Amino acid sequence: MFQLEPPPGFQGFDPRREVTIYQRHLPHWRQKGATYFVTFRLADSLPQTALRDLEQLREELVQKHLASHASDPDESATEHPRPAWEKISRAMMIATDRWLDQGMGSCVLRRVDAREILVESLKSFDSAKYELGAFVAMPNHVHAVIRPLEEHALEMILKRCKQWTSGKINRLTNRSGSLWQQESYDRIVRDSEHLWRVIQYIGKNPGKAGIGKDASTRWVHPNWLDQGWSFLDE
Image (tube, rainbow, N blue to C red; front, top):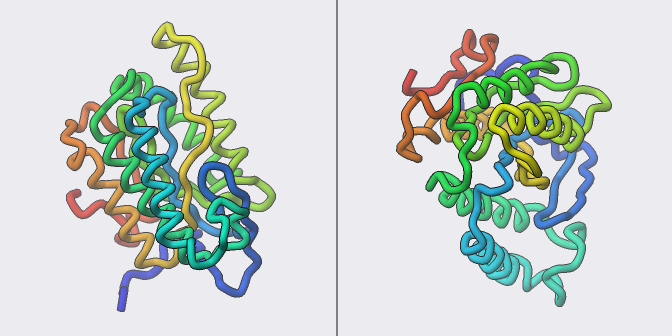
């Protein structure tokens, strides 16, 4: 049994509470008060080859996990069982991360000053609109643990972060156009043990991608660190 006490403010998935679902490329599960593991990436971080491979993988996963539940595997996500879509979402996130860790695209977040803009944005509304547990800013993507507060929706939190950082980073790097991919990956963190695995996944990302500390920024909330929620290599 997992022994570490939950960190301050953490709330995992509650099977007794209502869940709402909406679908874009993949379904997004929402539960009031829940903590999410979020991944968002730069718009140019995946080449067309990767996007085609990921779409093919998605179709294969849908057929594998959902064909027995509906005659049309692409119908509304609400028609499908949550565990099946969780498997699909997790497999898609892992496959996407493999591509992202190859460091394709402009990788503007390799620059310390660009990452500082992102970090400032992520921390700016911590404890006001959301609770920020941990994150890693990689050269072309970001992983974060976020729990929206009260009426603040995860979609709007990410949208505002992307809008604010896009303008500042584009001016810094003499770029124009969309900086971020519009849709993000997200999963509700199930429980404390799942949260621990997520934080270690975040912490290991720079080493797994083979980049140095100067090309990434890792962070865990100080209140979490005080209770033992840290990266194992620290």
